[in-house]
Image 1 (cartoon, rainbow, N blue to C red):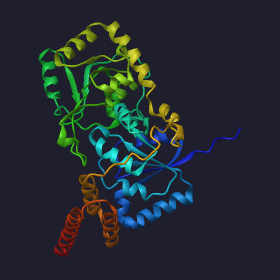
Image 2 (cartoon, one colour):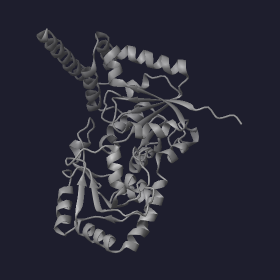
Image 3 (cartoon, one colour):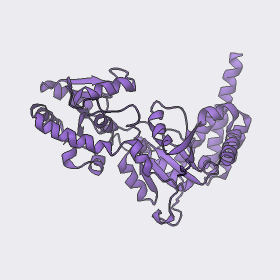
Image 4 (spheres, rainbow, N blue to C red):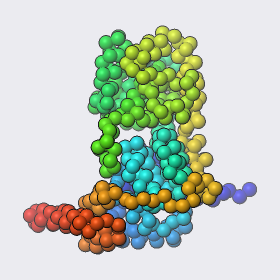
Length: 390
């Protein structure tokens, strides 16, 4: 029997990421994957040459799918995506709650085929705009596994891994300590963990504490200027389950989409958190019952399992909107894009290409002049610093 040939897929990242292998390795089980790093590529050869070589590589090697990692990289905008010639284009929006407005503009203006999301709530938002989405968490790749003996003794009663200085987490940790509940805090501002060290800790924990309320990060979108906090999906939940631990989580809308009520214990305030943890630590039968259901459900969200269902070649009937859904692109979107592009410009040809793009957008002349002045000023400062060093 002939083995099906893997579809060729190219990932376009801004830079290398610590979590990169967690996302890429599951994809490799289904696709032939290549990776291109935008910032370093443009830095070496300039933007026009980078785009020329990328399009040639796609054509020569018969690559059918491109996935653009757009979060935190405003230079990977719809203008760039539209300049890439490839049959299927998807966005990777792993931090979408912080960038959703900007990412939505990029998706609409580039008319991408779909968006890969790490938060199921984001998936629903994109579907309301007419896009296909695919839920593929960054966590849960090759380094996570159950202990050889899942029923082994777990010496850590309650484990929290992450930053304790975000949102209301400090308050929670202090209240738990005051109630006599010992929480082992690792990672974040306390310690720097490798993936292997984190896995070992998760495999030793009875309960893993997760806080869903998160401080909105600074980004090139408008979210940080509108609100400060957001209840969002955290990958620690999945990591806990894949290591055989039970996660006790603060409420988040995404949990209602991924779990039934009896599959994950949730709380909404410090008082509920204290009562829930005390109950689970004192009632081992209840703890084990929750753990079995929770771990079983988490196995269904393993990336290597999910990725088998990913079909980037979207069938037309799955398109919710048959016509372009594009409105006017706000000035702040272009401002962030062009400033970011000027920052990584290395050659005169880069500046010429950027100015050509600037001339093609629909925007008032004053806005284009303003961006031009800022870009020229940035390049002049860079040249001045080089001259001074010489």
